[in-house]
Image (cartoon, rainbow, N blue to C red; front, top):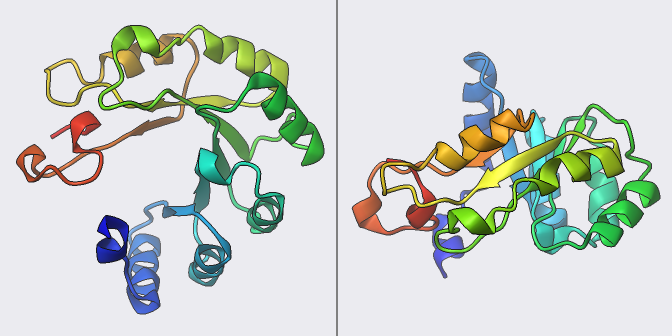
Amino acid sequence: ETFLSLELPDSQWARIAGYAREHEIDFLVDVFGARSLEVARACDVSGVKIHSTSFFDHQLISGVLALGCPVYFSVGGIEVNEILAFVKRHDLRGRTDVTLLYGFQSEPTPTDMNHLLRIPRLRELTGLPVGFMDHADGGDGSGAAVSLLAAGLGVRTFEKHITLDRELEIEDYVSALP
């Protein structure tokens, strides 16, 4: 129900995409299926993120890769052997327009559960850039510290939620920075 209440009509997506282009802002979207892929295609998005729940939807993956824009694949919860098979299946090794996004998501993710040292190994095994999905507590005053540690490991792409008001307790507020 939460996601349905947040859904925007196609005209709004087109308006937002136009605003982003007009102001030279990259417009990246999450794609969860054929319908959202069509909206992304119509909006000529700057990039696409694929959530780990869609990681094995090879038809969707092929459609997203055909868009010709940067693609970010969430690999949280995906086994290394599955990631390697995925990279091989879609011929991704060495591509500069593909980034794997590593991160463990809980509410919030305890610092010791991030296992940041897996990032350089994943980059080495896949031949792809590896970003970090930071779900550390956004309200404890050190919300960006884990991302800073990841930056020291060569990470250059980050996902970190932000919120206008943590008191509203909307989706992902626990890990969101105010």
